[in-house]
Structure formats: structure tokens, C-alpha cells
Amino acid sequence: MNDQPLIQIRNLSKSYGSKLVLKNLTLDIFPGQVIGYIGPNGAGKSTTVKILTGLIPDFNGEVIVDGINMSQDPLEIKKLIGYVPENAEIYDVLTPMEYLDFIGKLYNMEEAVLHDRAKKLLTAFGLGDNIDSRMDTFSKGMKQKVLLISGIIHNPKIIVLDEPLSGLDANAVIMIKELIVKLKQEGKTIFYCSHVMDVVEKVSDRILLINKGEIIADGSFESLKQDHADTLEQIFAKLTGREITGTEADAIINSFD
Ligand SMILES: Nc1ncnc2c1ncn2[C@@H]1O[C@H](COP(=O)(O)OP(=O)(O)OP(=O)(O)O)[C@@H](O)[C@H]1O
Image (cartoon, rainbow, N blue to C red; front, side, top):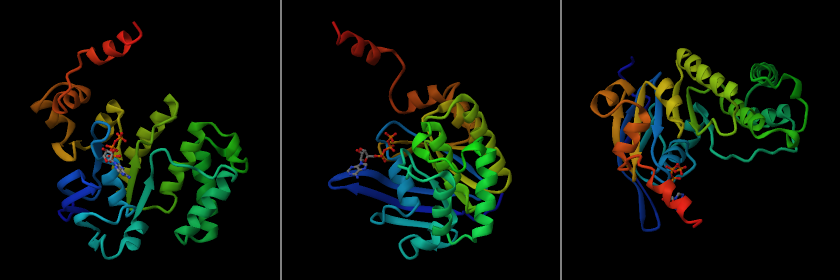
């Protein structure tokens, strides 16, 4: 593995008003790593991702991507990153080809390359018959696939996926797992946020667990397992202070009494 980090995060803090949601995060991410970024709801995952992708410009600390300082040249960094946001809105009056054409042009892609690649990717994702259909008739999973394609169409060095499995069926989930492995083989660096522990466990070579704005575990699944417990779900519950006892589910059911 290359010794030079591709992403350097130094003393990163972020507040919304008086609420501190990221507390002095320091991280080095190396080329070719698949990072599984996990944590409870509200832990600060999306905030980290939005800073990393240049969407939140006001933060304290330093973010350097491929030698470029985020505070100085966020546009240059955006070219290096493909981002698939959580719960993204898609312009569904467009067809997938029109949408990808729009996205590709934002990245200044050459038209012939863009159309050829869009067609190949849509076909590979099982949407070959829907290339020119308006997306307002698409299922949630079909739209999610188009979003995923829009995140990789410009062949970025770094791919940031924020809960990319939402709405995908079991076959598509398998396909995404395989895709992450293949993208890694291509040398891509992947930052993958998810609540789906078994997928994170399988695809990540490094897992970061964030809780209340702080990284509380950082290592391969094997090393976390040795230190803590058997499954990533158990490690997650143990380190975020919630043992799985069923009391919360009981409280919900009991509220109907
Ligand atoms: N725009 C905002 N204004 C104010 N508070 C915000 C804003 N965005 C996020 N927060 C707060 O910051 C904290 C971290 O939110 P964030 O979305 O980063 O969490 P997350 O780990 O991605 O959660 P989830 O798993 O639920 O998506 C939460 O307490 C949230 O309420």
C-alpha cells in the first residue's frame, strides 16, 4: 500500500449553532482503501461526508485530498470525488440518459465518452431497457441505481457512498458488494457509510466507528473482532453503549397497552 495518504483529515470539528457534532477528528486514508464508516443515527457520518465532498465549507481543522486543501480549492477536489448521497432527489422527469448527460457535462466529460459509458453502465445495472424512459415511472431501487451510476460516471479516484443500499433488492445488494470489490481492484478509494453491518463487514478493509462525533474504533473487521466481539453488529452495540436486550422494542409494543 502507498505510504502517502490520499485523504488527510486533521483536527476536524463542526458545530451546528452551539451543538458540536464532530469533535477533533484526525484521520489518514490511503489509496485503495475501502473504508466502512459506521455509527448510530446522528453520530456525524453524513456531516463528515458532506465536509469531505466540499458540500459543507464552514468547519474547523484541515481536510487535504490528494494534496489539495479543501479550504483553498474545493472545486479541484470535487473533480476527484464521486458522491452518492443519502436520500438524494433525482430529476425524475428526465430519462436516465438525460440525467447522466447533465451530470457528465457538469464534470466536463466529452459527449461521446459520456454517452457510451452511460449506456454501458445502465445496461450493466440492468436498466438497458429503460435508458430512454422517464424516471418518474421508476421504482426506488431503479432510481438508486441511476444515482449510483451518476456517482461513478466520471471515473473518480475516490468514491463516497452514503447508505447506497437503500431501496435495492437482494440481487442489487449482491451486485453492489461485487462492484465495491471491483472498484477497489481498479485502485479506487472508497468511503462507504452504511447501517447494513453484514455488507460493511464483508466489503471494508478498514472500519471506522463514529459515536457522538468521535471515532471510537478504527481497524480491520478482524482486528475489531479480536478486541471486542464476534459480529460487527455486536461490536457496534457494545462500543456505542447499547446492548441488544430488546427493552426498546418492548417499550414500543407496551405503548399500545
Ligand atoms: N443542517 C443541520 N442543522 C442542524 N443540525 C444538524 C444539521 N445536520 C445535521 N445536524 C445534526 O448533527 C448531528 C449529526 O448528524 P449527521 O446527519 O451527520 O448524522 P449521521 O451519523 O449521518 O446520522 P444518520 O445515521 O441518522 O444518517 C445530528 O445531531 C443532527 O441532528
